[in-house]
Image (cartoon, rainbow, N blue to C red; front, side):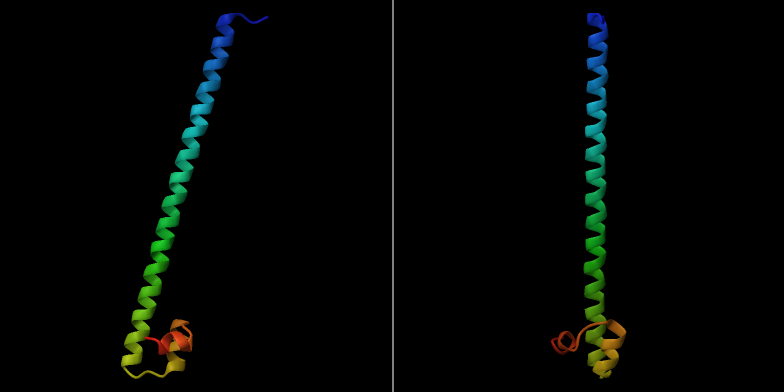
Length: 81
């Protein structure tokens, strides 16, 4: 049979494990949020850059089908620039 000191020891170890798990969970959640924010920023910057390039190409008189081929944008999107 376990004594009080054994029970207190087990309880403390359980608390440490729970605290560690909570810390790991928060760390992983934080890292996932950073990864999401970076990916979102890269995607938004890429879209803006692509639109800017298409706009400049259109102003230079480059054929719409060539702009579509190079940028991957639709004719409608290029027409709206």
